[in-house]
Image 1 (cartoon, rainbow, N blue to C red):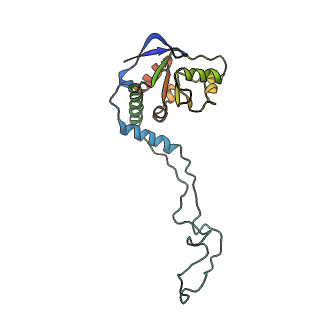
Image 2: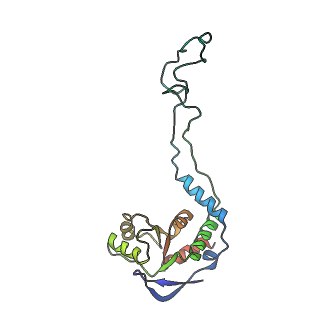
Image 3: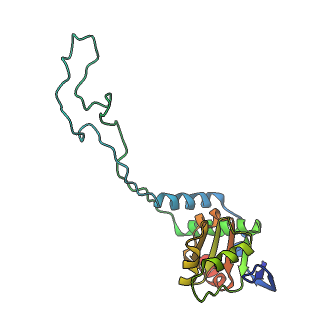
Length: 209
């Protein structure tokens, strides 16, 4: 498979980038994508929610009135969940939401997500994006050239570039990621995927094993 290579002003350079069909043109597996996105979102959860149960609540344990003969229901103490300010029954407790997912499934999910984006025409190959200094306006102009100014964009770079990262961090919806850190959630969540030409090789090396 081949895609046009674009300059950072959005125009085609007339060159073609060859993409590995084993990474960008497979039979997509929707279930693998679902599992990988589910794991990504689960691993982001803090799991720190906590409410007080009856034994943990501060308050009197004195029985409110005698057991029988009042014509009302039996009441143990003011800490009962039936009363305002009382405890909560089976409330949330701190827990870990992380779960394991096999590497082969995660790789399949990323290849499937990339395939969907290529089919949608959402993937563009960029011929270099060198920035001498961090400049948000320059990066915003770059995204606007690909009609991603106000949309979610994902820029894949071969290695960490501080100037590019700093230029993008104040733009809502813009995200810069190194090729070896690309994940399924970011791919599927982006409206446009801009891959630097130098990032294709490491990306294919990781996902074609």
